[in-house]
Amino acid sequence: MSDMQYTNEHEWLKIDGDTAVVGITTYARHALGDIVFLELPDVGRKVAKGEDFAVVESVKAASEIYAPVTGEITAINDNLPDNLDDLKEDLDKGWIVKIKMDNPSEASEYMDKTAYETYTAGLE
Figure: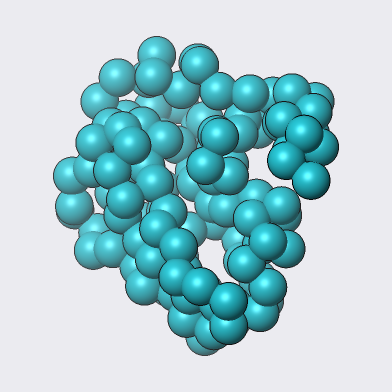
């Protein structure tokens, strides 16, 4: 998954044409602890870069998940609310939404895996 990118808010994204596949990082998952609930957005919802579009709740806290790009949510992972253990850095099972990007260049500013690992090491 070396072609994935990472945000400061601990979302990952993988670009597939004009679509960003979005999830939360393993770091975020571990920081949250036991996840008990995931609120997904509606397909067709327009989101702006930096806007929260979903909420994940754990035994520790509730946390917003932010859109890394501006666009329209074209798909949600309906399996996640009933399979919260799948919420991890996994393209097949752990993605949350797919966003058709209005401006694909927005995705170019994020960290690669090495930079993200360096960033999170500084947080511990």
